[in-house]
Length: 334
Ligand code: PEP
Ligand code: MN
Image: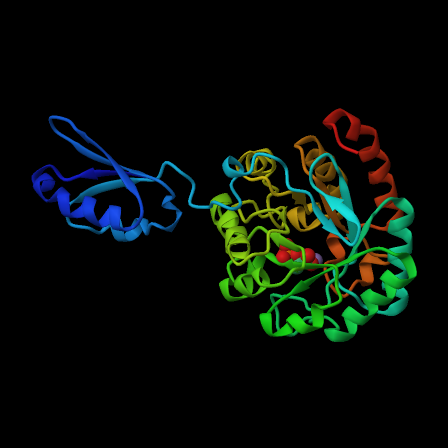
């Protein structure tokens, strides 16, 4: 972090240096004719940049080091591989997760689980608690939905991932394999802190309008409390384009993989909101270096209780998997 000191205040810089040193940091001074620069040396992730900017003697502040440490690839050069019920996510693994937006009935979830497993999915998704825009829309089956997911796991052997909305629900998630933090909760900091104290793998979706740095800071929240089993999920961000539900930020995939050692997967279903775009976006995600995909698959999309328009049928999922298998060797994944 670099501080530029106001020219008429440079006589007061001694006190600031003392304070910086009292925070366990070192300083490097550079006094030019017109500008005095103070470089902070050490772990500046705990330094409050807004507080420093507001000091009377400081003209401006520039961060050199990213504010996240545990998630930062600089301090952890190797890819992290997260294990979920025997399934590996990250490294040279490509992981396919599929299932309906929400769990509806036993037949529905077990049938879809069987179908996607036969095509190559290694994990089952399904929402039991649904964050819906309208309070009148189907809100999910709640605890019963989690029981049905466990039943589908018992039948197929697929580990399950499902979304938590509030930390008071944590006990209900004791027996799920991976907990999803949805886009709308990416900055629910109390939830992130609570999940940091759990030992469950977390699927952390990018917020609807959040920057990559904010997303990584949310991962840092969980990691700072001790849970480092995090998989990031790019699911599209809100832009000015109304023809798709969101805009898939493909550049985020290679960029985030540069910045962090955590695995990154893509959700092409929420990214576009359109079933017919799921195949091309899936292939694009593979090409961009994604560590996996999470795809909404429904046996009867027109009658789905949630997100039918973006849900593909099992046969369409099967066709996508065939194409993905063909390109995986090119991107060095298995
Ligand atoms: C979901 O996975 O069904 C979901 C609600 O996703 P997101 O949080 O990305 O909107
Ligand atoms: Mn959905």
